[in-house]
Image (cartoon, rainbow, N blue to C red; front, side, top):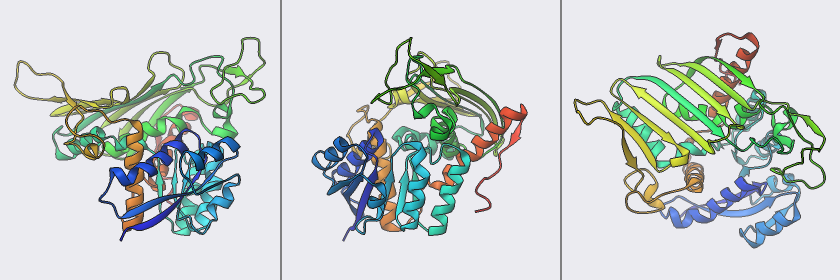
Length: 391
């Protein structure tokens, strides 16, 4: 008999909706599962979202106060999908209530907040997961399997990047995402976290870093009234200071001796969502780009005058792909990754098996971020120190 798992979702923004849809889809996508998920309660401050939670997503109820949702007796697991500044208070309350916790990244906008979240979860002994959802792409899992099989030989270099346009408009409003005490750091918390988690998943620990940052758009229009999160101001509007970084780059050394480069931006014009990696080894190379997420480029070092990269298309021969669509070169999408990670987390709760990435892996990511931040000040190489070692 499957284990019933009652779920609370805190915040019905885009990611709250994505996870709620995933829970609804899981029974049809994964018939051979050990659990039955139930959307019990959604917490959101917006009345229209609470109404949608019940009418469109099938939650049993919706509440304004997230504390009420967390402390409900029929809730076993909590999904934290609210704005960054609420993540740690929600996590600490959920841990104190003995609930399993899945949180969207960043766990905290600053490294010390992520460490506090891990400490709360470990003290309470609750299971945790974090939403580095891109590592669940079937072709990324295949890339990991290729690396682990030795097909690329000894890994010598890794290039990671996440170049996005979501902050490229100079008239984009000065919302919480650009304020340090609300969002924490900028692109290093928001999207470098994805690149570093990907590298740690594929290659392993990073031991030393040096890097730089820049705030490309230093001032933005101050929002007024009921301005939307991605709203746009006018040239004559009063402006305020952007308090965190738009751009960051990093050189690094991996524990296995490989070198690495990273580059992230929210203000570049051109790359719309270029979350990508390249892995180079002594016997071959691979590359993947979210903008073409159903394609993996593979180079095999062989004695062949026609050598070069070949394209591997996604298909049902790769992990999880067949749960969504059969055949070869039939595409999966971003929310399918979310469904895979939600299924995997819930399955771990039902079976008692460890889940990764957990809050421990989130601390591994911010340990790299903290070393990068230190290098901004010292302008020199900085060792990566495990910020969770004392917990």
